[in-house]
Length: 271
Image (cartoon, rainbow, N blue to C red; front, top):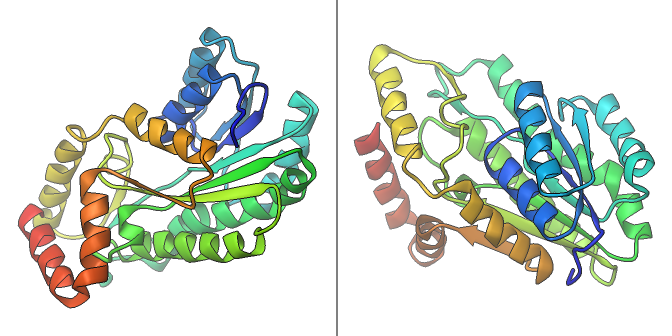
C-alpha cells in the first residue's frame, strides 16, 4: 500500500504503547483513524493526540474478545469514515506464570484477546477490505511467536497461533488487493509487562518486577511504529522489530535445540 493519504485505518489496543504510536504515525501520514481499546482514559488521550495531528478520528470502546461487539465494529467505522483500508490487530495482554500456577480462566482470558481478537478483526473486516481499492492487515505477534520461553505458555501459545493464522490467511489473499503483515516485536517499552497478570511465589513475583523495570528501558514504541508503517507501505509479509527478534529468529532456524537451551538459561537468569 503505497498511498496512505485519506486511507481509513483501524487500530486495536490504541490506548497506549505500540497501538497509540502506530495510530499517531498513520495520522501524520494522512490516514483517518478508528481507534479501539477497553481503556477509556488512555483511548481518550490517544484521540486527543490524533486530533492535534489533524486527523479525522472515531473512538470505539471495545473488548476485542467480545465477538458480537467486534462484529458491529466494521459498520461503525464505515458509518464514521466512509470505508476502511487498514486493520492493525494490536490489542494484547500477558500472563506471567508457570503452567502449574496458571489458572485456566487466565488462559482463556488471554487467548480471547490475543488470538480470538485477531481472528474476529480479520473475519469481520476482510469483506470490506477486499471491496476497497486496496487494503492491508497487520497482525501483531511477538518475538515469543518465534520462540517459546518459560512462564509464558499462554502468551507464546497465542502469539504462535497469530503467526500461523496470518501465514495461512496470507496464502488465501494471494492475487487480491489486500496485503497482510505479521509483526514480531522484541523488547518494546510498553505497559504489557507492568499490566500482566502474575501468579506464583514471592520469588517469581520479584523476578517479574525486575522484568517490568527492564521493559521501561527498551525500544520506544514510536520506533516500532515506524517499522510497522513501513511494512504496510512496502507490503512486507513479516516485520521483525529489535535486534533480539532478528537474532532469535536466526538462531531457531540454524540451531533450534541449542538456541532453546540458551534462551531458557537466559530467561532463568533474568527471572
